[in-house]
Length: 122
Image 1 (cartoon, rainbow, N blue to C red):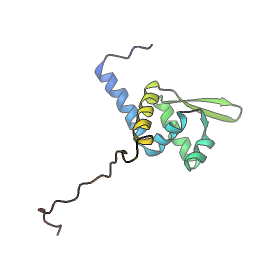
Image 2 (cartoon, rainbow, N blue to C red; image 1 turned 180 degrees about the vertical axis):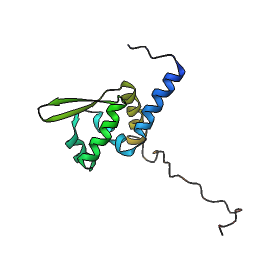
Image 3 (spheres, rainbow, N blue to C red; image 1 turned 90 degrees about the vertical axis):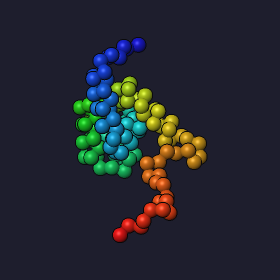
């Protein structure tokens, strides 16, 4: 088993790089699609309903950050998750957001109803 770097600043920078990459809904969905198997650019574009050019741009950023690898097979380039940390985080996110019990999905859109003692906006 690989030992993680104990330097807190290194760990924080690595975590921020991963979180920044996954902060894009498109990149997050691409990474989720890569969890079960390698996929080509065209397959990712079709699966996610995106243009091939946009998928390629996002994959370039993910490669730059070391989160995916690419391998050529003839004319097709196959992408795979390269980062064990990314795979672990994606699995956790999948467990929280994609397979919860009914009614347990956390939402960032949850807002409290305004209390009756506040004035209405002008």
